[in-house]
Amino acid sequence: MGNRLSKIYTRTGDKGTTGMGDGSRIEKDSLRVAAMGDVDELNSVLGMVLCKCNEGNVKETLITIQHDLFNLGGQLTMPECVLITALRVEWLEKTLDAMNENLPPLKEFILPGGGEAAAHCHLARTVCRRAERTLVSLRKEYEYSEYIMAYINRLSDLLFVACRVLSREAGAPEVYWQSQRIKNEVAK
Image (cartoon, rainbow, N blue to C red; front, side, top):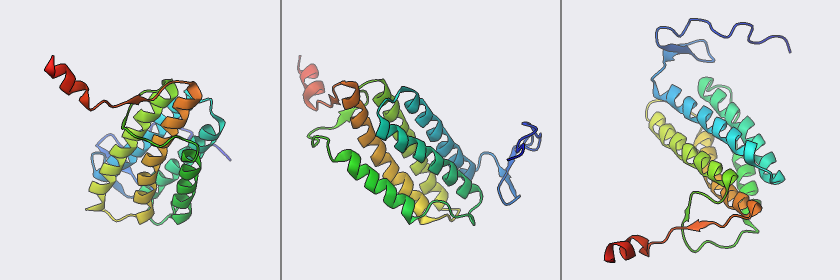
């Protein structure tokens, strides 16, 4: 592979537009660019999780997901280039099921925390949900593959389960939401 980026700045975006994969230019504050930015931010937060993650299966899964997210962003910039397919969604589902198999059933909601890697993973999960909301808004004005939404939706579920796995791996207890806590405090 030769030098793909020989010059980092191009000055082509100085007037508030950015180039798409098909050569067109769109406003940097468009929903399409916002969706691509949310996906990019999610990928960056996953990088933070990986810096703290020692669990081998989770680590390999998150690295694969980072590649998928890069492809997903590429598909948003070049819709004719289909990279996220039903096969990627099925892979997420199978991976999620395998991760969840050895976890105890949940009886309460979990608060973000459970060790440093798990806390970063909770942040990734919330950024994933934001990306999902942006993609829902984008769908109203721009058509993209149905598998993009399915992938992001499954990914937020997988990240929740990964939080639980990372919490167990770190030996950190999960912090359960206590519905009575506020009521008890107010009653005092």
